[in-house]
Amino acid sequence: MTKMIMRRNFLKAAGAIATLAAIPRAVQAAVTPLPRVVVVGGGFGGATLAKYLRMWGADIGGINVTLIDTNPSHVSCVLSNLVVNGTKTLSSITLGYTSLKNRGVTFVQGTATSVNPALNTVRVQPATGAAYDQPYDHLVMSPGIDFLRPPVFTASSTGGDFDSVHAWRAGPQTTWLKNQLAAMKNNQTFVMTVPKSPYRCPPGPYERACIVADYLKSKKYTGAKVIVLDANASIQAEPEGFGYAFNTVHKGIIQYVPNAKVDSVNLATKSITVTTDGGATFKSYTANVLNYIPNQKAGSIAAPFADASGFVPVEPLSYSVKQAIDGVVYSNVHVIGDACKLPGYDLSGKPVTVPKSAHMANSEAKVCADAIIRSLGGFGYPDDNIATNSACYSPITKSVASWLSTSFVYGSVGTAPNLATGMIRTDLGEAPLERISSDGFQEMFIWANNLFADSFT
Image 1 (spheres, rainbow, N blue to C red):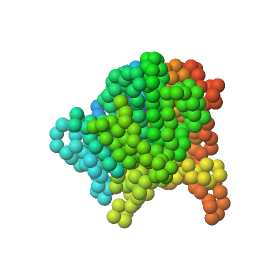
Image 2: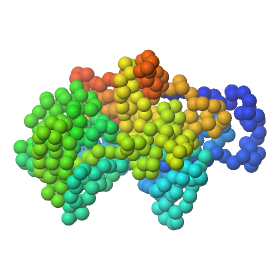
Image 3: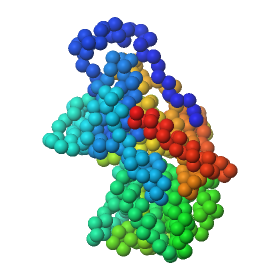
Image 4: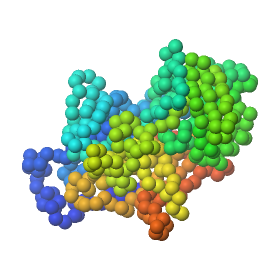
């Protein structure tokens, strides 16, 4: 893992901040109201940001932080696949906001429906009561992802709809998937899709396929299988580890189909059609359990700032949006986590995707918090000496896990006219086959608990 971003000691800065620090806190608050930062989305990105703004904001006399989320608590996607096989419970991965409130964060349970960047307000529909406009000095959106429909979609007459089968938001859908899996029998088929990259948590779908296959093996079902329809040309994360899992550990149970572009989904018949080989081959699959994970885009509140990819281009040093609204770029509007799109490159200058993972969202939140505090404190341009990183453990069975880690630093690679500036990936590693082990499985819980604590306590 690379170095974590380090906070500067703002109170050592010369000039206006020294004068400001000399004013007694009570008098200062009366003269100048605390700056207001509104955070939309209480997942790993939003919760971490709210926490660190309150912690580090003391360096400039304090920040008024409001966190808005539709739910009263956050159910973690991290470890959620272990709920599907009964290893974990939903309550064990449900993370509350009490600690953030104790830090002085104002929590609002409600839905942020729209942003008016010209007026510095966000429209909020609270869980109870009338909608209102929440003012801000800086707005940070960490809304996660929304889903793109396939060309043809048919809902189920029994109540199944577009959002009922992906289980890509942990919670009731996770329980639905667990119950569907538990009802499988001999010679039945679990069909799942892998979205087109980029999408939330690249190891996640392959991890789920392994968990399901392992469950079917543990039940000693004969003829039961898992069909993985991947929209990508190859496994997108931990290719060595998951290739080993598919072809050796779960050989004969997992059938992996790359380049599978989804054409239609029918929940009424639990069938899905795909084309492969660039559209040359057409095939239909019928499932006993259909786990359709759609292609993805930024959460709807951030959609006005997205580009054609569906995600929001941001400046890597501040996570401020780059897309103009009515000809104006608003540097006090930021997007972090799964919804954002960063310029990423490897050491040769080849474009790479910055992972959309909980750990990366946690890392990005700290960079964004630092940049906002610098802006509010009058310290000038954000620090360019930054690093972000992401680790992920992936269960292969109910007792064995692999891991993946990647690190980025801000900088430039290449030479003119091919100079690339952005987040440079300095390393990318996955567990060697001999490290896909029970030790990795136990380390997974230590990693997850540390991440939970850093974001939500």
